Length: 619
Image (cartoon, rainbow, N blue to C red; front, side, top):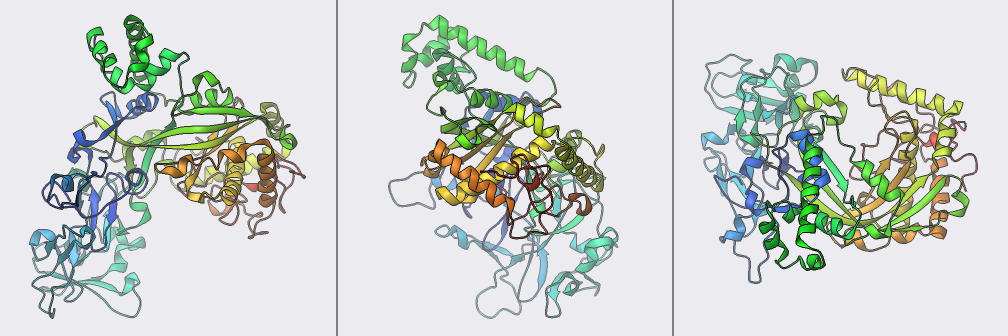
């Protein structure tokens, strides 16, 4: 719970604090819901610092130079003895506050906010999952007080604000004066909104919840008061209209994240050591402070280097980091350094968190796949920089994302939540000449025009201007589609579940085709990320067989011919011949939300053969 009532009410995994239940998100508990509070309420001292300077520079470009650290959530305390629910360890965790604050008694139908004190909180220190609110004064209850349930409706706007549903305003149609209690009840056999009613016990006004949705909701809801429950504040004014949403709706919270692979960016043993220890050495403000660090446990590898030499390397790295922060407003190319290291593996750069080995390309695919690199050790760092409501940040213009993104703290944050995971992967680099030749063919150009038309329509339908920007191109669509086909094949073969396999697409960033590759990898905080099962599939013989199977499966879909004949420009989608039966992947696996997928750009389908990159005989 919040700092006002420091009671443990549940637990979640660290990675969920970025992708599912981060700052500003509503977490559904067994008996009520809570919202994760902003960075102001977190105990910063309990967080674990994560070293990843390249990502930190990118975050500073987005959130400001005051961001000093990437912090992992406080870990669950380890204790040798029995768990003490009243000890200090029980107070360690992520702060949350009850939200929504309106509850309903399922027996007497009373609907009221917690501030009226009609509902009493009943914690359970030994079983946090049994914590609940009860209506102790229920007039119809027989025996134990009934457990109150949270109101199932909320309101939100596209600037990231969220609030309790305005029940009093809604039932009285905006007319002030009545102070009676409310009740929420259901009529009819179904739970559709037309059968849900709220009524005032004093004046008798009542209203169906159907009037809060659809075209009629504008007359039933007040102006947005700019409330951020996770920051405990309300600005008092917001021009965006409110929209009613259900508690637990998937559009109530969209995380905006940044992630990088920890790739070595410096050659030489000393530069590598300084990079690995930069979390500590970055605080060395003088040679004397540096000497204290070098004499500490964990820095024995620096013993072979002169102190002055180490100091010069620290100063050089600090200068480069400062230039990176002030180098302009453009977005940092986070994938550029990864592409350089993966496409030209150097054994001298291998370390404890990064180990690459190059193998031969599959013989049957050597004309399109230039090289294959096995990532036997990979480290990925993910961080949350904000969130949006109702629409994801991917549906906004770059400038608009700054307006719609809800902040992590009431002031510019000094730190941002992050997680690190370890794993393994297989990197495939394509021949750029073959990519250019294919992209220049008439069939590929025709497919690109279709996808571009769908992109324009999709942005226009959401009022995003100009509609042409941010189209990734047909080369990205081909690499992305091929990656999904390969991820599905890897999942079937190696035993990793499909949600634990992820992708990174290295596609051209401009008109020139200067890079083309994919990394299929698994990364998890547990042992699943380092079992070696995925890397073993990158060996030439195994990979050749799997590539052939993946392309063969992609030619046919269980939903054909409907899937292959899908026209994205007609239904406002951003995918061509793709669906859940063939190319769609879990949300945690795809880097762009299953958009820009199309089987026709990788293999021939019922609909088209002219745009297939792999031709009529893929294997």
